[in-house]
Image (cartoon, rainbow, N blue to C red; front, side, top):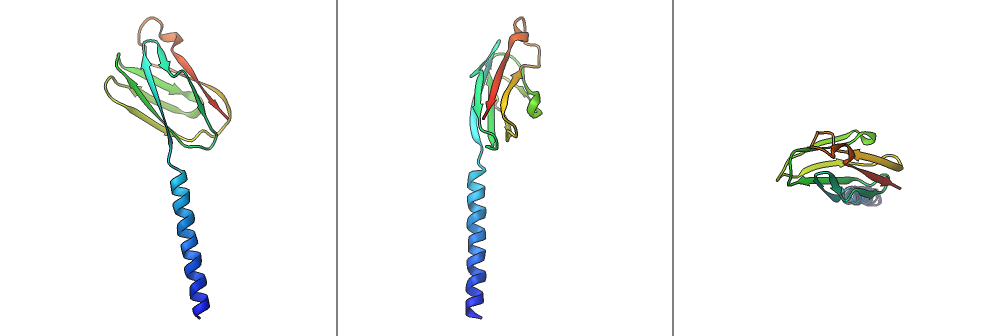
Length: 117
């Protein structure tokens, strides 16, 4: 019976360790993006497929939008506040993100790319 208990205890500890490791690996990478009429900085964001990421969006200008339709990601960017969008890229390629709230002349050219490898 002693041997059986040790086996159960060992298996339980292994499961806890594996769960802790998975939890530690799931912490999203943070990418800060600043929106300013009529640009995003950076305007190219390199990501890895399957790696969770949090985009932290800020602006000091006016209310703007962030839309990455290929990932069904959308948020308003409010001056003086941080908008956090967390997702895990599930496909590789080059994808466009853009401002979807009219912010003045030049709005239509306000876009960037996410490159997922």
